[in-house]
Image (cartoon, rainbow over the protein chains, first blue to last red):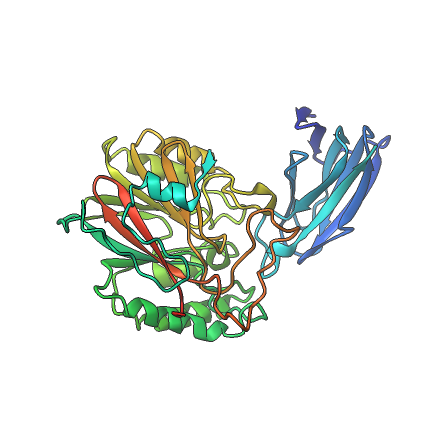
Amino acid sequence: MKRRLFLGVAIAVLGGQAWPQERVVRISAKKFTYTPDEVTLKLGEPVVLEFTTEDVHMGFKCVELGVRADILPGQVTRLKLTPEKAGTFGFFCDVFCGDDHELMSGTLTITA
Amino acid sequence: MQPVDRRQFLKIAGLGGVVFASGLGCASTKSGQGYEAAQDEFFFVQLSDTHWGFKGAPNPDAEGTLPKAIAAVNALDPQPDFIVFTGDLTHTTDDPAERRRRMAQFKEMIGGLKTQRIRFLAGEHDASLDNGTAFKEFFGPTQYSFDHKGVHFIALDNVSDPKGAIGDEGLAWLKSDLATQKPDARIVVLTHRPLFPLYPQWDWATKDGEQAIAALMPYQNVTVFYGHIHQENHFKTAHIEHHAAKSLIFPLPAPGSQPKRVPLAWDPANPYRGLGFRQVEAEKPAEYKLTELPVVKA
């Protein structure tokens, strides 16, 4: 398992492995939305973001938190993070996926 | 890295005596001082982001805008040495047959340009869903270089990878191409996405763009012309200038000026506002006079 401290967030991208002790937040992607597209996390609470896609290869990127992941059809992508700064940060799809790709986005809100 | 405002850009490029017009229908004028036509001076025209096939409220004259731009370019006297389209010639579609239909229509439309020396770059709308396959069928390679009157032009593909990267192969090609040039060579890079992180929150960047800029940095006279952001923008990374062109379909908001990068609304009282193309005059040693021209003169 690889761990990095990156712009205020401890992150790790997992293969098939999961941490049962951490809260799992499931996010489903499909053209051209995330469900949910507004996610609230607690400052300092380790979580696993669990991504799936209903159609094509998508991306997830949050610049302010320094995290990104590929979301591949037929796979579950898990991204472990521990938010270390509060605020509301945008995320978006960074893998071009079609007509309204530019609108595919959401927000991560980190509460104190 | 620093943004370059228009006044600063004029100063940097030594453009005293040039009227830098943006969407006002003005052409550049020369002071008569320090400008003599020389063998190596020439101009080309940059058009960008035509998005042929787009339909929607941001441009109710989507099918009429490209013909108007073609007419505006044809009205230039003299005609440019060549024309470059810096990507997103067509609007994306999931249907490969429709993609090819749009590319064929686009190619037929631009057959009406008086100047038929045309260079093409792909945008993500053209190339990202099939890694550039259809684009290559219609417009040739997505990455190439050519020389014109003492300037070395490099067309750099940062869109065939749907992640918006040049990729290891592309970067290796760039480095091998640059290796043929002297440090003081006049180099122009043509590309679609900004090579520098203009506004990463809207993905206005190239994932491995910093590697391309690092490869270009040893060369003293490098200028980059790109599209993608549907608005004029001027920026410098050290001595390298980056100039974004307007779109020919709809303008996008200034970086970070609103939550989402949605098109600016069409203004019926001022149609085609924010759209246009660019005339680029190349002068020695490595200065470029940019003249922004509208689709339709006011």
